[in-house]
Every structure is written in C-alpha cells, then in structure tokens.
Image (cartoon, rainbow, N blue to C red; front, side, top):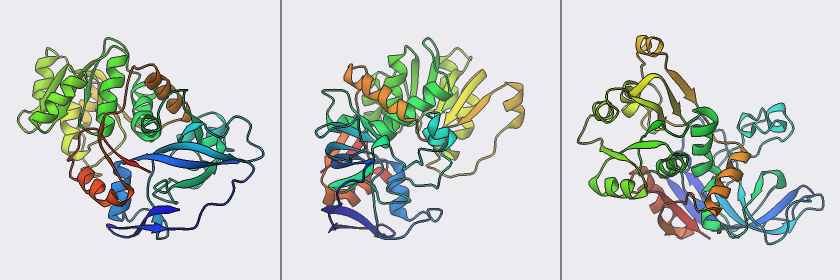
Length: 341
C-alpha cells in the first residue's frame, strides 16, 4: 500500500507501507479513490504545534472511495458502494453522537490526517458509522468533496446562520474550495451572493459560478462596496473563514441583526472586535466547526440532483502532494485540488 506520510515540518514522503488488515466487525475497508486537499492539510504539513500526534503520520482529511470489504456486524454497506468518509473518528456513544451532532463529539480529538493517520493512502479501515453512502451515480471525485468542502458550508450557512431565500450573503475568498461551495449552496436556496476575490481572473470565474456581485479586495474597500450594493443596508449573513485580514470589514458589512458565521482563521487567530457595534447593532457571531454526517448526505443529494458541483482546479497524483499543498498555501487555486489514487 502506498501512502503520503508527514515525517517532519514540510517534509512528506510517499512510502510503501503495510497493507491494512481485514476490517473488524463494525468496520469497512475502503479503497480510496480521491482525496480533496484543505487548509487543515496545510496546517498539518506546516507542523502546527497544537496538534498532539506522533510522526510519521499519513496526511489527508477529506476523501471518498469504494467499499471493498465489510465487517461481520455491518448491515447497511456493501462491497462496491461509493462512500464519503467523515473527517473525524468520533466515539459514536456520547450524547452528541447519539443525537446526530457528530462535530460535538465528547470523545478524544481524532481528526484524520491531523491527529491520526489520514486518507492519503490506497486503502483504509474505518468504523462503518462514519462511511456515508453516496447516492447512486455520484462519482468518487464529487463525493470526496462532501465531508469538509460542502459539508462544512452546509452546516455553516443553514444549521448555524439560517440563510434563507431572499437574503444576501457576503462570501469571503470566493475562489477557495469552501468559497466556491458557499456561492453555489447559497444560490441554490435563492440568496443573493456577494463574494470577494484577489484577481480579475478569479472574479470572472466567481461570476460564472453564480455570484451576483464580485469584489476584488485588492482594489476596493470591501465594506464600502457592500454598503453600496445593499443600499447602505448591509448583508444578512457574512461567511467568514479568513480571520484578522477580513474581520473588521466583515463586522462593518453586516446589517442590523445580521449574522456572521466563521469556520476558520487562515490569516491568524487573534483580532479585536468593536463591542459597541456588536451590541448596538444586535449582531450575532457564530462559530462553526466541521459538519454533521447528515450534512454530508444532504450535500451529496444536492450534487446528485445537479444543484451544486465541486469546482475542481487540478487533479494531481499522490507523489505531487507537496506541490499541491504549496499551491493551496499560496492561494494559487480556484476551487479544489484533488489527489486521485
């Protein structure tokens, strides 16, 4: 079995490793078909100090593949099924897990590719409960973008921010993987989408993807343009995942009673907030992490119906993984970089 192992900071080695054994009674064995790269892979590659793990560790947090073997106790998955794999090994027994709030699991942190061995390998055994079956006809490349890229956005926009038809949403970094997903999912429910990008080329692509208004943040003050677009009203929802570089503008872009939902901070982790504006305008700031497995099912159904589709920038080989991570880190991408195995 081939796998991409992180051996040290920014040092990945593609090795031949031991084959995985037959699955345990509650597990399935999956032949990995595609792994979508995310910023969590970049953080792992950089050697983020807060990750408690032992090296080497196999990278890859978002993947899909084909079930090739099934444990004796598994009843709802079969050989040949295409499945997307939830990005964390949850306990399955705590109250949040039993209630379907998988991203609130009270068990030990076990994010694939970050805390424990991930999916950048040809085969893996996982608990059957975290292998989410794809609708018939959905290909493995699309399914690979369900656990993080589309699942995270579905959870942010609808579970947390409650975005509805007729509302206006500001999507930061519309050329990123989750940015391209947010544009599509918001448009699919009838929202007006304003998005930000850093180049003219990305602006054209974001507009083609469905964004109603595109702001080049290198050329315009985002909150000023948002106020003009909305008749000084502001947006109902801000989709944040950038952090300090956009935070103040995000707050200023909200209407009274607006909601800001954030799942990331790629430009840093600390930023001041105007508390007077927060309470005087009755704003709501919502943190969002990962998704529920139901979100994965929902987005794959939307994909199968043709309502949304992953925006694939590049498909690369396993031995090109470091080039892919470097491009993602440099934001030299529109949509997703996917590793085909």
